[in-house]
Every structure is written in C-alpha cells, then in structure tokens.
Length: 276
Image (spheres, rainbow, N blue to C red):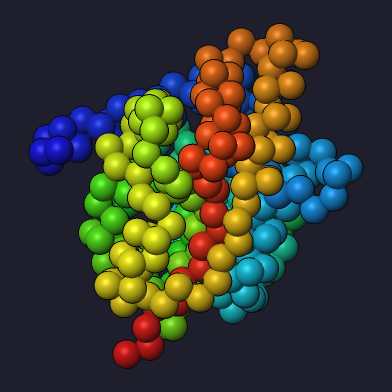
C-alpha cells in the first residue's frame, strides 16, 4: 500500500467516525455511555453499560495506573474512557483521535467532568493521526500509552507505530492495548479485515515479536474472547429487540462467528518499554 493509499484509508476512517457522531445509533447501541469498545463482564449480572466501564477499569488495573501516572490514549473516541480513568485514579491524561468531531465531544465531556466530578481534572485532547502527533503531545513523556480497540487500524505499520509510542514513553513506561488479532487465515477473517479497513491483521505471536524488536517486553496479557462473545451477543440482541437501524449488525455476527470458531481473538496486552 502506497503512502497515498494509506492517507486515503485514514481519511476514510476519519470520515466514518465523524459521520457516526451525527447519528444516535451508536448512542443507542452503547447505552449512551460514550464508550465504543468491547465490554468486560465481571459477573453474569453485569449490564452492557457496566461491562463497558469495567473494561477501562481492567485496563487501568492490569497496567498499574496510579495517581501520579500520565496517560496517553491513542484513539480516545469521545474521551469518556480516559476521563473515567482520570477521575477514578486521579492521574493526568491526554487523548488523541483521528476524528475531529470525537475531539469536540471529548473536550465537552472534559468540561462537564471538571464541573461535576473533578474540579482539578488534568485532561487534554487533540485531533491527530497516531503517525502525526502534535508537538504539544510529543514534547511530553508518559508513564502509560493506552489503545482500546484502535491499534488494529495500524497493524500494517506496527513497527512505525511502536517506535512512535516508545519515543513518548518514559523508560519502563507501559503500553496497554485491547486488540483484535488473527488466529487463522480464512475468507471470513478477510471479510472482517475489509469491513474494518485493515490491510493487515497480525497474530498474537506476530505482535509479540514486533514489541520485542521495538524495545518492549511483553509482560502480561489476558484472553478476552469470552467478553468479546458476550458483547457481540448483547449488541445483536439489542439491535433485534429494539429495532435499532444499525448497519454493523452483520459485522457483529461475523465477529461472533470468528471468535467462536477460533479464527479471531480479542486480547488485552501489556508491554513494558526497556529501561535502557
């Protein structure tokens, strides 16, 4: 894929997510939470909305975020997950998203959080690509870089992405990600990649190798397939029961089948930057 084709791909992704803010479909699907990710079901009685918040809490927990942490969220969406981390843990946060309209919503949410939840909230948001971070971000050093269901867009440029992440992380800083990864090559995995505008999808072994060659140590992980299945099922049920006009229903069905048949896996990944 040429750079020009890559730029067009990212413009397409940007436009898709900007357009999504003009519809109430995703708000209806995700219970108005502002989240756009897979849920983490701690108990069978967890609601989908609670499961969404649980996932961000699990990401913060497994990566050991603390009040003195400084967290960069790449692909922050509406900003709610990283703002919840800032409030619940007390750390400072920065969010980056390709979609301008997402950043408008994130800044509005930050103003509301500062008024209603944490008066001394320290949160910044910028509209930018992973690969063209503004100086206001690259001039900072972070203890954590978080990517919730956003790294897969850049599997075809994984070395470039990890090198950029390494530059903004402190020595011994932590990269934590939830990501779709390939378990086998089939026509259905190709359909999933096409639907998500992924020219490449890595396996877990390939991602671990990329981390190592870019100066990271793969320190911990968690298989989230059961959570991915339950999240897919809850979305499909909600679409059917409430008659939500969601064009992504077939994608959710495809994803469910891929995970059930061990062709796709959803993983929580924690890697530590080398201290040297």
